[in-house]
Length: 109
View: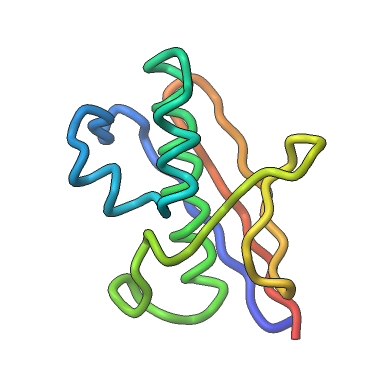
């Protein structure tokens, strides 16, 4: 194992109406998915999950915030709906509960 990372975020801290912030966090592909979501609640969960996932990934990589741009880290979903990072050595799990999102990342050698 090379690294692990976990992050939790209070969804109430996120502003889905601030498009500069949203685009700072999401990759272009993620932003297209975000725009197609039909409810603000789902958009908030999606943004929060991606935010937590990217923070957890940076922690697993042993780098601080700022060493990587959030929008350069991409988390998409496979056919079954499971999230994945565009890093073949990384595994991610994202969960939502009420007003929180949490993500866990395991980075292998």
